[in-house]
Length: 234
Image (tube, rainbow, N blue to C red):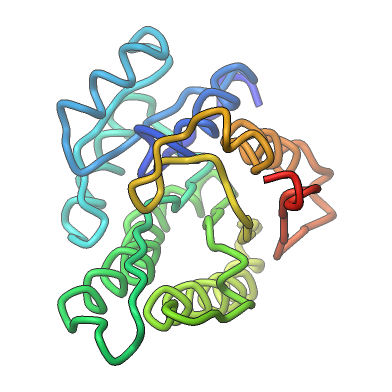
């Protein structure tokens, strides 16, 4: 993994940041993006020197932003080996009160975003015979009340990723989706503290990503469900 390059959307906190830290520790070069360029740059500077990690401003709902982000990665390091579509949001209301604005916001970020990220990075991944990973959710297979919009996007993301996996295998591009349960992250306004100790930690997802990247190329775990071991301890 040393010297390979990863691009992580939504990489300034939570799961994305946990993955970034793990890949940097493994010797990779990492670009993280967020909607606020200043925040992304500040977080990147806290992680290491510019020759190892950079922060980029990109709104994944805007395809031109993702195109420019990938161009920046290629200009900096000349290659792109791993792309992790992690950026996501959730609004949880019963379907009769869920607003059209919030529905569209989730569709744009959780479903259009990973598509735009993949399209922007496609040629680079073909050149490197790289790896594309989406961060979905157990909500992509388990529906629940007040989750109609979120469920729709995560069910869709799982289906999109699995179909993309079949399309891209002939190019030796590996594609996986990770479906976490409860994670101690900033998702949906949560502020992680000691009460989140029972949850999956962001660094655990980072470890899982590293395991996928280290796996023998002949084997592809295309869909991975991961959940807290003891939710009864919450």
